[in-house]
Length: 517
Image (cartoon, rainbow, N blue to C red):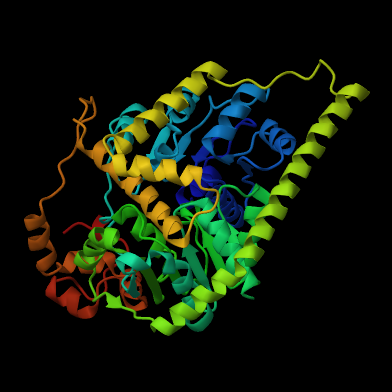
């Protein structure tokens, strides 16, 4: 954001229009980017605006009509404003930033992204940031970028240098012990500044209830919560009011939470990329951190990848069997309390929905909902939107479930039963991760599409090794050195020894170059 703000400062705007658009995949990341941008621009005249779902629509409309310099938005809410907020348009956008582009395409924003790019100004600078260069991201780059310059920082399979990686082995017939293992780790060893990642929202919510009944200060972060609840839980964790945050992958990317000491993976994520993002919440900016992953027999493949790519040894953590048994008994005793909490929450949700319907009906009777209020429109019709969503979902799930009788049987059996056993819950978590991994693998195997954009070849591993092994040149060393001594030398100019070596006079007259020889 700093170069963007510098450009806006030195190139003042002539009219009240939005000049910079930053697109992000999640609401939390948008709020974080907006907060940082406001802090950086607090002593300038640059104005910023946040347009994400879950926050007040009317106040966002007022802010957009004022024409903020920088707009940070999620794709869905931005399109909503483009089609329903009068006098707001993207025809004056000078800079378009697409952050975490691969994640946005994972979230089925592909059509929305293309619509936004179509509505933006043609004469603009576009920056696309992505952790991985998948086929979908390359397609988006071909649509949104013109003669792009590619900058590859490093491979996305490198974890932080000061991260200690550990794993706890789950035996084949002990899959139901995962909750007991996590409870033991959080109660006995890792008691504060901990993030625990699960594969599904249901498991995250169940863990939140269980750990809360055990007396731990715990919060949750996933898609089923309202935006206010998500922000409140994130704030409480940052302010150290709660010690443990149970989250899905919605918190795995982009969020900068200071002081996270430990990351626990309830199940191993679907791919190495997701693993790196999860454990990347700790050991940030040169600090040390620890990750503990629970690994079952079906997850050994991803563990081998972790061990293979690790720069330091990956340690095995062993918990005494009597400790696991003790916590498993405790969880079985708390089952009735968990059911009671879930039932109470369900009743509260139904009551809130009934009150909302009653409020709408009351407004209609009072005549407050006048015909003058226009219906909000979308760039796709309801039928087109529904059709694209169904076809995408069918395509994705068909790839994962085709010919998998065992999985189909498991899904049918789980639907019949009202309550799942701990083993079945753990198996379902692993199943979700495997389905995602298979969909990703199928996408990778698809034939590549022909593009107008020329793809630059990455340097081979052998060439990279030769280059990294060689000594750094003096020019490179001087160019990249930013210590105090180097900066002082640059400002002072060549030393006496350097002048003598270059055969320069000790003191050069101010107008020497104009004198005749």
